[in-house]
Each structure stands twice: as structure tokens, then as C-alpha cells.
Image 1 (cartoon, rainbow, N blue to C red):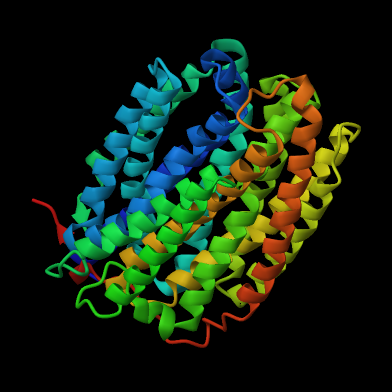
Image 2: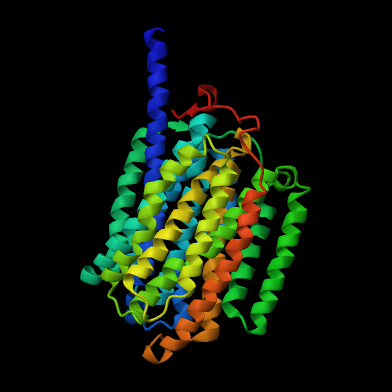
Length: 482
């Protein structure tokens, strides 16, 4: 091998590592923010005198905007360039985080959280696709495991750092801290990633499909928030109608924003997506509800609550790289289905928590949930990304993120609906604690039922190691920027 070949090999190897590092940094940011804000919710409620129902929108506005735009942005990345869109999203996220810290009302904060969701969709719609673009199939599980570990590191440090910051410096400091991390990642991305990936260059963006998809989620989520009022039911029905129109349109358009053939003819892709949706629907609101439980029912301050909540994502951070690597050797459906079953056990344990439950018992339930989720997430992502070819990496990655965000949104929608039914549009004060506990238990019963169904969807997906690989990336698929 001559020196030029060695240099090219070293450059490709360095590119992979830099892309993985930057994607991991971005993967850390948004879950760190989300888990930090969950701990800070009671403090925000006191500052702005926010009722229990409006509280949920501080988290939900972000999720809704991100879920609406994740798949369109993933497709835009395939067509126009994943690195460019990733950098735009990362820069926007950093700026909006700063503005969130300066919000003067709950309305302003909710609007800015929606803008955060928009910029997050630009990042997460492309970050996994960037990693998948530079790593060959036999290394992909390990790389995705590292990005998953970064997500869980954000989830791990969020409650602890966010709780401490909120307790000593106030909740606004969480946004300022995130701004600093975002600025560092922007500099790294702009300075070191000089290649571009656009494997679907020249194809058209499906604007009509993108709008129908967004309207579906907007109608359904707003409908959830207004139930049991009749307006909520009508909005949900309108969302179902938009979904039907979306599926019909995508089945006939020449360049769809979401290829329906991936769902009709690719069982692994379809059931991996469904499994992800179910898993996040059953688990995302756990931290939100437990944060309220620990601070209202157990009387802990934000710092102490954050330390308790740390136990779940720490387990996820430790085990996700291991399960990602295992999924390169063991069928992902086996690992992911086992993870879903373990998560179900953890959710059952949470159902029985009450005001007398010990902190050790609470930590144990979170550890079980964390172990289950770490067994599920990386293998599921590996199965989904390994089931499509290169031209659909951005779409598949965006679908993965969209299923995650849609599941998180539905999870928060279930939580919001149950809080609205059991507590109502009032601030959560001691007189409403019994009602909150009843709603808390009901929510987790619903999550257990969802997770049970997810076990079967996960196991039925089929094997990916028996399928032909999508093929490793080549230097010819990289378009170096001038």
C-alpha cells in the first residue's frame, strides 16, 4: 500500500470517528434538555403559576413540533445533504435554547419549546443517517450503540445536573448550560466534518405528504389534550382522516416523503418501527410522572429527585453500547423483545408505588426499566437501519426518530389526558395529591398494557442477519465540500 492509499484510509477512518463523536454530542443534547426540564417542571409551574394541564405542554410542544417535522427533514437530508441540514438544526437549537432561558411567560416558553422541536427534527432527522452512512453493516450496531449511550448519558446527567442547577441557580440556567454545549458542538461540526452525504440527490420533496403527516400529528395530539371534551374527539377523528389521506397519497406519489413500500414489503422495517412507537409510548412519561410523584407525594426537592431519577438512565448508558455490539452477532429481535419484557416488569412495579414506598424500592423499579430499555433500543435501531438500502438511510433514520418522538408525544398525551381527568386544570396542591396518585396508577396500568403488546410486535419482525447487507459506504458516495 502506498502513502496516498494509507492517507486515504486514515482520512476515512478519521471521518468515521469524527462523525460518530459529533452525532453522539448532538444525541446527548436533546435528552439532557428534556430530562432536565422534567425535573424543573414544578419550579416553572410556581414561577408562572401554571395549572397541571398546561404543565404538560412545556414538554409536549417540543415533542409535537419535532415529530411533525422529523420525517420531512430526514427526506430533505437525503436529497440536499445530511451534514448541511444537521449543522443548520444544531445552530438553530443552540440559539433557541438561549431564548428559552430568557422567556418571560409560559406562553413564550411553550412557543420557544416548539421551535426547539423544529430544530431538533433537523438534527435527529439526519444524525443517525450520518452515522449509518459512514459505518459498514458489521460495525453499525456498535456505532449506533455508542450514539444510544450518548442519549442515555443525557438522560442520566439531565435529572442530576438539571435538579442541582434548578435547586441552586434556577430553572433558566438549564437552558444556558445547554446553549454552551450546543455552541461547542456547532464549532466541532463546522470545523471538522467537511464531507456531504446526499444519496437521493435529484429527487423531489413530497410537500403534500409532509403537510398531511404534520396535520395528522397536530390534530391527534391537540385532540388528546382536549379530551374528554367533544372537541378533542373530533380532532382525533380529523387526525385519523388525515392519516388515511397521507397513506393513500404516499402510496401513489413518485417520490414519497415516507415510502409506504417499506411498511408493506419490509416486515422488519414495519415491525421495528411499530415496536419503537409502542416502547416510547409506554415509557417516555415515566420520568415526567415520577418527577411529579417524587416532588409532590414524597416531598423531595429538585436536586434529590434528580438523583433518584438518575438510576434508570445510568443503567441505560452502561448497557446500550454492549447491547448494540451484541446485536451485530445476536438477532436484534431476540434482544429487543427481551428488553420489552423486562421493561414491562419495571412498569408493573411502578404501578404499586404509593406515598409509603421506600426510596430503595423506587430506585429498584427504575433500574429494571433502564435495563429493559437498554436491551431494546440499540438492537431495534440496528434492525431498522439494517433493513433498508443506502438511498433510504435518511428516511429510515428519520422514521426511527419520528417513531420515538411520536411515541413520546403519545406517552405525554396519555399522561395529560389522565391528569386532566383525575386532577383537572388546577395547580397540584396537597388537596389534589390523592387524585394525582390515582391518575398516576392508572397511567402506568395503561403503559403496562401497551408494553405487553410491544413484546409480540418486536418478536414477530424476523431476522436481519439472514438478509443481504445494505453495503458499506464508499468514498464515491461522499461529496466533499469546496
